[in-house]
Image (cartoon, rainbow, N blue to C red):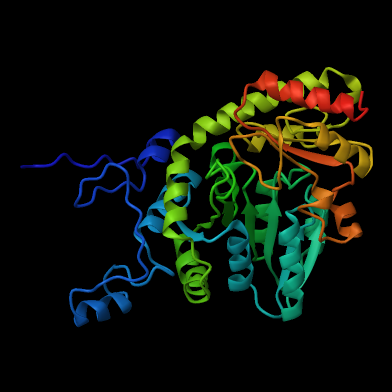
Length: 401
């Protein structure tokens, strides 16, 4: 009996690729891909084992670096990001660390935005122990990036929109600066996901995803990925991952693979709700001045956001009067969950100065714009009127009018 040819989603629409890329039908004819929970793989004979290890034929060897569930995740995410290839990691920070440590050596120079996730800056500080020079610069100041370039500059690293300030960097311009210097540009795309922004199409060489956030979308598992040119990933970064072992588990890969199937729907709904809430809050001029959101025309890079993002995202910030008022506001929220994560189907809130960025020095937080009064929201899938009501009552309770 002949079997129907498997649908090829290559070149199809975003949502179609999110649902069909990476799907294979195994011997059991399962419609949902299986979880390959195995540490190693059996070979037909010694010669076949030799050929696989010698990379003369394709095959799985050991789940530290080859696993069918992980491969399916990599293929699907690469398709969505418009990348030639993807490499999965155990977390977003594992992906960032792998890029730094596989592309930089003693004597090299890294230029990094000072407005990135706190742990990213902490890893950049660790690099200095190994003779790698690091220069932090203002994300939106292109002249600062240009002036930071040195003959030994090998990598530019940016996160846009930035965590947590939502400052933006011009990706096309940063790519040009990097390439003119013979360096590479790596972009952390976690706030946007490929639904809202595709840095590779704007000239970036590498993209980082913390799949823990929107890719999963339900706060269940950790995961990360590095995406970009296949030759660079397989020739330089993969050997580092293979031997150092920041491995994405098969179970987590399966969860993330399934999470991408609803990614476009979730992001669109969350963007709609965030715009509704911000626009409602902005009608109060006092509150409007405290809002940070790329969709507002008061945002310094609103025009840039309109050009390089498809939507304005599902995060916004409130700038309150110091830590005490920020904590009072957060403690008055009833619906929003206090946690350091983002990208969940539920609305989350955090105070970065005392959580995600607390291990930075006061000067580093100041330079990054992480004030004591900054509160970050990640908007979920609840009814938008309910989220707005919660925010408004907490503002009132905290004495913000």
